[in-house]
Image 1 (tube, rainbow, N blue to C red):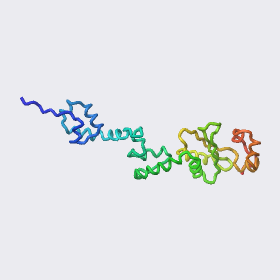
Image 2: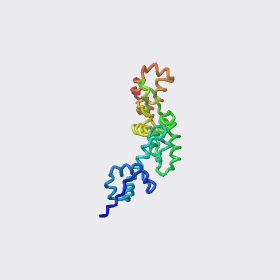
Image 3: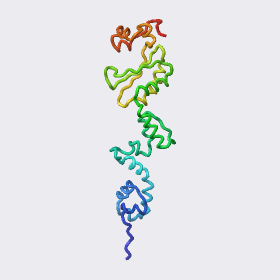
Image 4: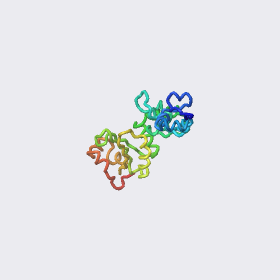
Length: 218
């Protein structure tokens, strides 16, 4: 009786015959030698085609010299656009990878800066006075962008809140408020200097909750 032909199990040395990824090799190994013997070498191509997504996962999960997965390494990842939101940036999918990396680097250097927050806020509510109050309540992780109801509407406040959200420093609680008195109100009716205003309003809470007197809202 003629012995049946047995196809040997796939090993890493077979990659020279039909290139396969490490992920595909792991799947084939899990299928076992008996199934491979019955299915033949064409099983490699079938499994390799079905496991293309595994190659992507492998590439992204592989640690770089920096010590973290390649998918989070701006230099190593083949999909840098996926990191753009972390810098508060949206990049078109057709943007070349090298251009995307340059945009992210430039933008991330400004993320969270007063300049960046002001620029985003003023673009959302042009012509409105906006003040950045840092370390609100003495907490270094809290800040406030303040608009004044004498000149800004609730729609302005909501627009500023949405505009600055992508630029907020990670870990910092940033609130956007709309107080009832404008900068012009305090300067004209409680100033004209900051010292005059500080004398009349003993605390930040008093200042923030001050209701302008009738007829004094500009």
